[in-house]
Length: 298
Image (tube, rainbow, N blue to C red; front, side):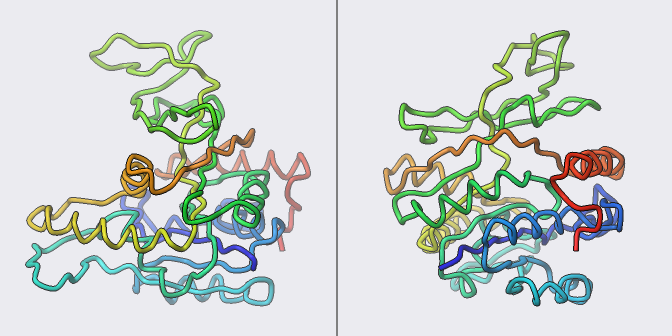
């Protein structure tokens, strides 16, 4: 059975100033998300599932329903609120986080699947690595994460925050340590740059998590159980969110599953602000020059 690619695309893009998930980046106005779809098709994935909000449905179907000739396309919808029997919830402006986003796809996914963000570029080689894991090694007790080299995720325009991975001797994830304000300082890479703290050197070859996960469908039951508990504990907090790394960490600590960190040499980039767009355009153009993608993607 071919694996599925789950694309999280329900974010409002308030910092970007528009629906950044379908904003054109490529030479023919292809958004980043189309390069992920292209890489998934080339690597052997069998289905794309978009997690979106209902108000995005028309725009997404207009843009992506044409891909059904190339790969199966389905949609799952993430509401702002999650109705849990017996629990009174305050009004919210945002959904309950990335774990909630993954959970809404449980009825349309029954095979191993990868999870990515719609507005991030992950690299063609990474899709091949993930496809191979999902087909050959994924199980209820063995899941995965693509590990990016820290130096391949830095910005030339300021500091970044990254989750630095601690691994065991089997290349399995032990924990993710959040490091903030990371940047190049002379010939070193440091965190706590431009902060009140003294900058501390970090290994530029460290594996970092960019939230590219490989899951067995059994993960849905764990997410649902954890989300219900989280909502009960945070029902009066309108901004509380339950994140995928939280689920993964809890399952690792309880020894329910191991998470293999699959290293990649691909570069990663994301588009959060409008100011990020020129960088993304340049990066995609460079990949086209290298022959990774054709100029006319489709």
